[in-house]
Length: 417
Image (cartoon, rainbow, N blue to C red; front, top):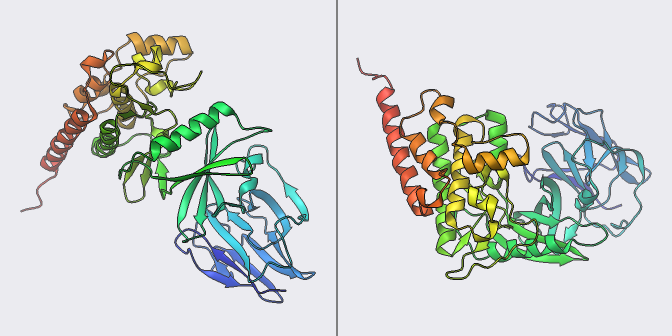
C-alpha cells in the first residue's frame, strides 16, 4: 500500500502534515499528547483517530462533541480514500496517498455507522461535493448556504490558492430562473474589479453542476457579527459604511446598482477589509429607457432593507435605493435592529411607505448628535430627499467619522499630571 498522510488545510497550522505509520494509531485532537495537535478550542481533546486495518486506513470518531465529518457526512467509522476531506468543526484535514491506483473515487464506501442528523446543516444532499473536484477546484468544506446556492471553501489545484466556490443547487434539473440569475451574477461581477467588491474569477459547469469561483474572504458576514455582538460602535459602523459606499460608488460609475445591500451580503475580513457580495439582483442602469431585466419574484431583495420605491416597483429603482438599503444597514449596526420589524408583510410594507423610522437617539444612549440626521436622510421616503449618489453619502460618512473621532479624543482624560 502507498504511503499515506493527513494534511491540515486551513487555520493557524495550515500545511502541517502527519505521515501515517504502517502499524498503530494516530490520534488527532487538542490535547498536547496527540500525534497531530490542532490548536482550536472547538476541537475535542482527542477528537478522532486513524488506524491501519485490513490493508486500509480507517477514520474513527472518539465520541467528540462536534462530530467527525468525512466528505460532509458525519461518521463514527469509515475507510479512507485518497483525496478524502475530514472536517473537525472549524478545521479541515485532507487524507493523501502517494498513489491512489489501488483506490478510486467511485469505490463503494463501507460506513459501519453513519449518522445523518436532521438539524445538522453539515449534511445535505448538495454537500456530497465535499472532497470532489470541479474542473480544477478541490472542494474542501461548506462556508455558507442560501436559497439558490451553496458556497464551498475550495482549493485551486493549479496554484494552491483558496477560493470560494458558489455552486448552484439542483434537483432533477437546474432551475432555469436561478440559472439566469446565476449567470447574471457572474456577468456583473466580472465587470466590477474593486477592493470593496468580492472578486469574481470564472464561471464553469461540470456534468450539469454550475459554479462561480470567487475571492475567498477569511472573516465573517456583517450579519454574523451583529448576531454575536448585538450592535456596533458609531466609529465601527461608519468605517464599514464608508467602505460599502466606496463599493457602490464604483459600481455606480459602471452604471450598476446592487439592489440587495444588507448585512448578510457584506463580508468583513479579519483585517477589517469590507467587501460586498451577491450581485444576483444587480441591475444595469439605462439612461432613457426603463428595462425590466428581472424575472418574476426576482429583485425583491430583503424587506428590512428595501426602499419604498423598491417595494412598489423594483424595475425602476436607481442608485438611491442602494443608499436607502445602506442607511437601513447602518441603522441596524448602531442599535441592533432594523428601522422596521413589523409582523406581517402588509404591515411591513405600510411601515416602509408611511411610518418614519424610530429616532436612533431614543434607541442608542450617548449617540453623537450628528449621526442620526445623516442616517435619517438616507432613510427618507422620497428618493430625491436622500443623498443622491454613493459619493455624496460616502463624503458625509467620512465627515461624520472625523467628527466622532475628534469628540471621542476630547472625552479621553489627559494623562498629563
